[in-house]
Image (cartoon, rainbow, N blue to C red; front, side, top):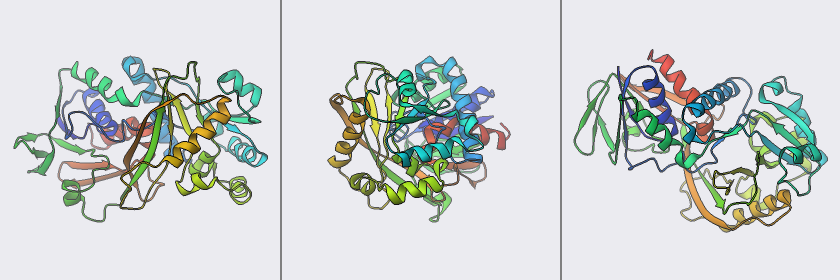
Length: 374
């Protein structure tokens, strides 16, 4: 079988990975010279802790298993089973964590409520003020800016993989064939359109104007090296307001009696923080849903995140050396893990995982491969 994958972000690359792993030939086409979208502009988190119970959690756990296995084969991914800590400052925040630990699927997530001392034993860099912390053992991380490159280098070793960068697919011709903007036709047995937040043009022509997917904009930043290990990923209690796993009466009480910081509320923020391989910290993020998106990055969210991080670390944040914005595609029904649609004979559109793309992509691609009988 010959599979044409359009898009070189993490979702497309994982479809290429599964196809090659099952003995098929793959041609992957990317409109940029290399992927430049949300797959690189994220935390690199394999984020199990906040996922909704049921299909979403099962997908994340399977993806976590696949990431670990691929990471052993491709050390360049920088996979590490670091887990995550959410420091807690108030009784209302602790009550939400206690409700999470009481979930029937808490053990699958590796949830445990820790004292501040126990949390600092896991992550000594957290010298700031907090009273307890929620631990999630199943969370992990990879290096987002280099993961696709590492996967591509491994795929090239198979002899069954071709990467074509700097080509935009303009047309589906016949069954399972596409024409790019160089005029070349690429013929296969299946075409996977994994075009990320690119939802216009050919995608709109094939899927129609009522595609149940929206675009979401975010802002993030990265610092100079911290100068010491941050041994776990770190979140704040605003993540409770964002992730479905934490919905409970305790969360309702938190929202009612401990309003979110005005800047965080305006920009729909949470703190997530991961240390990169060079020691710097990736920190974010905001969420913007209304179109047209702003074209500038605004400073108030960065100031808010800096304040929150410094209270956890108990020290000044290193110099911020990168700030950026990104856009990803999210199903309008956010309970859906991904939008998978056959748009022509032999052609499937895979889009809309939202902020779950980095976490869930290996399992999303595995499901596609299974459904298509690869």
